[in-house]
Length: 367
Image 1 (cartoon, helix red, strand yellow):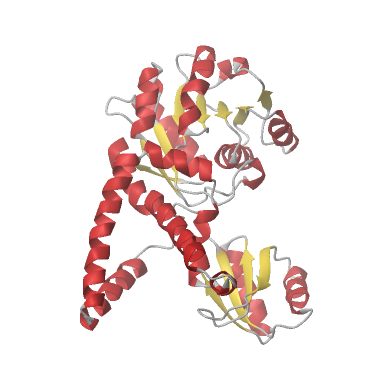
Image 2 (cartoon, one colour; image 1 turned 90 degrees about the vertical axis):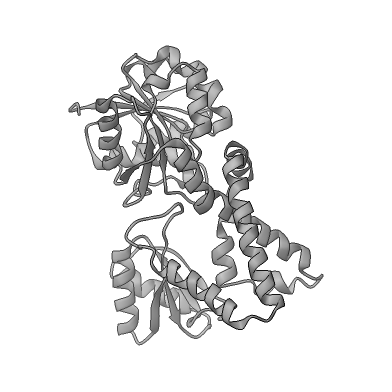
């Protein structure tokens, strides 16, 4: 790889902003040229020193780029490519960060840039969106799928892999169709299910909103992703429609099986159902991030009284530990403690656990 690289980022949302922040923070070799449809976002990124050259409203200054990350929704790609491609050198590698790949491959083919395109999808993110949610460590230890064509030049694939590693991510290679089948099951359908559960509670809840009031623990965990951008996820579902429908059909078969066991009072069948799920879930590795951001939480058993949050926050701050979020858990349905604390990373969480236990609190890691 060249000693110095000029990287173009088209779209400074959560992912595009994090690409720029990560590369600038991890290596001095990168020069970042960025475009966004909002001038104020570009100005903020320049102030943050995430971007060296802000491009607005056209893409003329992308001519020096060695690689361009297309970080816009799939429905906007054709318009952006039409304005971007005339300014790129023939040697410039084009990649994207979309969560569907077969559809994007067709878009690249229509744009006439298939020979210089390699698809990409970082399996990291957040329910938050926009540049304000971007962070330099978003991709650390996250899998990053690439979907090169069989005839993709080896040096272009090596270039993309090297940049991905500089993001702190772990490259993994798939075909576009396999990628879309996998993400339908582990990302797209779970978003649908989370939203279905939230809408179900909204429909079944009474005028006193008891369900909404006491929803906590497991329900909040499995429905957190329902807070993601509706526009983004409508586009993703349409883009990967066939794979999502196939996955939902398979899920309907499993749901039918579950209903038959429940109707028959098949206790052994139900135990087997939950046991199989638990065993498979427990086999998942926690070494790397999945499709959503990994959280580093502690739940502490404390008395819910005025000043308790400030007291614990102060104790942690004295040891230089940064807290992302802290608050009282008002339902102990699935928790052993009433205070939930979120940390930046595993090291901070481990240190926080040690401090709280030394102070006499019962605390455990969660998530």
